[in-house]
Image 1 (cartoon, rainbow, N blue to C red):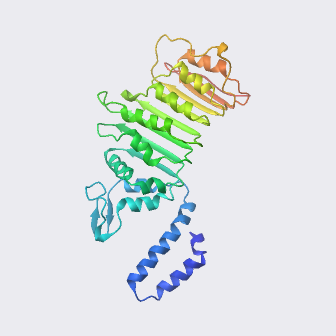
Image 2 (cartoon, rainbow, N blue to C red; image 1 turned 120 degrees about the vertical axis):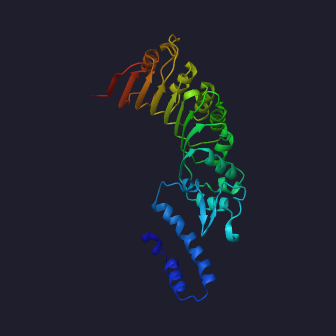
Length: 311
């Protein structure tokens, strides 16, 4: 905060406010002062998302304003719309992390119809969403399009289906949106799908093919295909790989063989929990001479292998 008071204009404005008789004008000047100060506050507080602060009820003075009502676009006392205030704060957000519950879906639906919101996300680099799939879960394409930016470096999504009767379409459409979006600097991708919401490997493979600059990948799902492992093996700058498969066929063909050639050229850390056949094939395909740590276990039992290179 000391950086704010170091600005000559701020100090001058405060001194003028102290002697200004017109309170209405003083209020307007205070607002201008606050807008000038907010960017510096966000530089001091690096990774905080104001978005989560608006997932509840927003109140203004003694009258409450619920942004989940039909009148949510109109603020009390003739003030500015709630989504305009969100768009203002969005300019300073670097990280968004929230749980996609019923209320959050309504907020996202509101923001998706507000172009100024996405246009304001000029600093957003990290998106972290946890969701329980329900019948009212928002379409994944709308969800991702609302928050995507060309400078995004990290995407993390954790999804659980509360009932096998609920389709996993929101998850599929979300992953498809990632695969078809231009994210030139995306470096980290995490996806966890449990319960009946297991992601189709086809959509997962589309994401991996589309974003060849991934350095960190973590996948927690039911199973993968030989194609998934082959794509992972050939990611040119992959350094950190974590795989968890909680269901797999008792008998499966070996996904990779020595004749397929080596890969994982720049892998530094490997953490894999799945069937032993896949573990052996992944190990047999590692070309990297930079390995620092690895941890492997059979998905059916306790940890079987753990170590650090050179130890």
